[in-house]
Image 1 (cartoon, rainbow, N blue to C red):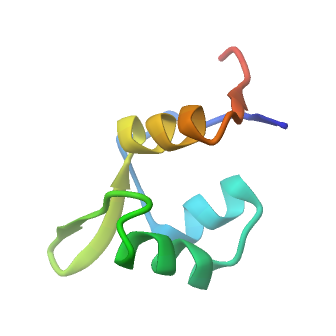
Image 2: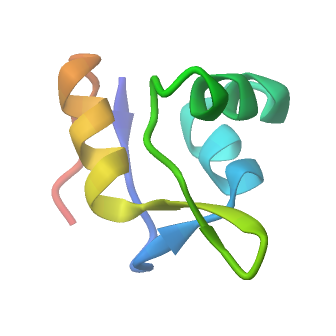
Length: 66
């Protein structure tokens, strides 16, 4: 499976869910259980691009050349 990440610094959980092909609740569960490190910006959960790339590498999911 190859993933192409949009050119953004931070992603909303629903965006991560779409990118990974999982449900939004799965992404929230991963954030809550610290599978994916998330931060809060103005009370909103965000996942940095670098953290998402690290997660993909650990999961052995390859990124498409951009």
